[in-house]
Amino acid sequence: MKQPDGILQFYDSLDKQAVQGFFSRGLDYPVLVNNQKLIPFQITRAVTGNAVNIFKLVRQNGTEIDLIANVANIDPYPFDTFEQLIYIADTNLIETPPDGYYYLHIEDSVNTWYSDYFHLSSHPIGQLTFGPYTNSYSDSYQQEGISSSQDSGYFRMMFSNNKDLGDKVYQFGYYDSLILDSRFNPFHIWKGKKEEIILSESTGKEVINEITSYDEFEITFTVNRNIARVLSKLITLDSFSLVLQSGEEITADEFESDITNMDTDLYINVKITYRVNYGDQITNFVEA
Image (cartoon, rainbow, N blue to C red; front, side, top):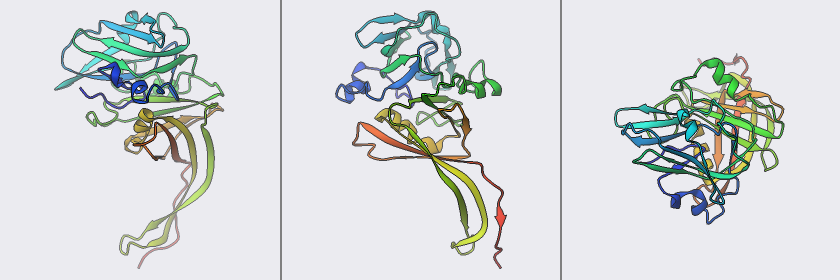
């Protein structure tokens, strides 16, 4: 069954991992994961009702770390024709794994799934909840999750969607997060204050009818192709939040992504533009 796009992608075969498709270079620009809580992820399966009976980390050298003691963090949500397994990263792992490159191996007696490789370390905790389908969901908890670390060496992003988009992108109140290490390329700039001129409804021409001011920013960084594919769908989502190196948390009023060479490059430059601080509209002109 096709798995939904996410920062941490899952497959039914090791041959499909990014490290294979990227000609053994899939460990460049990896997903960064906190070694105490992991990160949220979701898996889609046919309706079985089976419990997860294998849940483990597999290190790059083949060493396995059993996580079955944490299997209660994986909650199944049944729908008409499929089930969604959602990992809720709101409690610490029983044991903290050592730093390194890992993938997840999960089974339920019928299905087997493998994630892409990720780098496990004391990276800051980005977002710890999936939203309204999470047992511990609340507005205050949701807001606090992204601000749980003030480490100045990182940027943190959170994306969410409240629509059911099938298996195309985020679904069922799903929240995802991306951690960017400031040592590896991301930079953030203020593009200044903009003015927006609307089009006339009657003529289709630009008219100075209402001018709205806002602050526009860009953040640019490099990621692997799988993460870029998720970010390419940013405009379809409901919300985008960013925590800067200073610890300042920003919730964007508008946001969009600009991604080129998606089909040809293994590592993609991503530019996300977002706008905040919308001012009052000023009416300067009224059509006859």
